[in-house]
Amino acid sequence: MRHPFEALGADKRKPIFLSLVALTLVVMGVLNWTGGPLKTPAAPQGIVSFELAGDVPSAQAILDCWDCQVRAHAGFNLGFDFVFMLLYSSAIGLGCVWVACVLPSRYRPLAAVGLTLAWGQWLAALLDVVENVALLVILLDSPVAPWPQVARWCAVPKFALVFLGLGYVALGAVVRLVGSRRPGNE
Image (cartoon, rainbow, N blue to C red):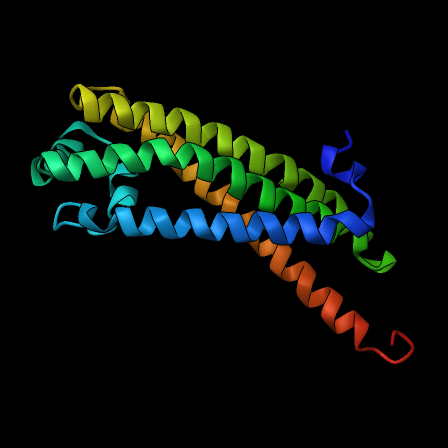
């Protein structure tokens, strides 16, 4: 199945990709800045520790370290993350499509991988939505089963898909760069 980003003309991919990356980085900066207070001994990685808690005692330990103000920061981060997930999934997905479309012919089998990973970025965003809903239930109500487990079950494959997509885009950039430096490609 064709990815919708394949319909973008080659001349439009780069400016749209760069815009998405810039917006993603701005939103990531806001999330990092507002997420600073979330880093505690029980949550050394802030919101990521909360996402990966995985069980009621771990989630409760994190909440016990967060006072009302810190919990408000967590709520903001979880809400603003909905903007972030649209941006990162689209930026990485478009990057995967762009790489898949410009790979030299000898690397064509990798193009199918890129298109699959592009779809995978939207799956990552969907997992992120479910994860955030679970975390909001924990934050606003209490850490009862199955919500910490649901958050973790969604966070782990989400992170895997995002890192695979980023790796594919980076690999594609290296292949493209090396290919453009070969004699006859200038």
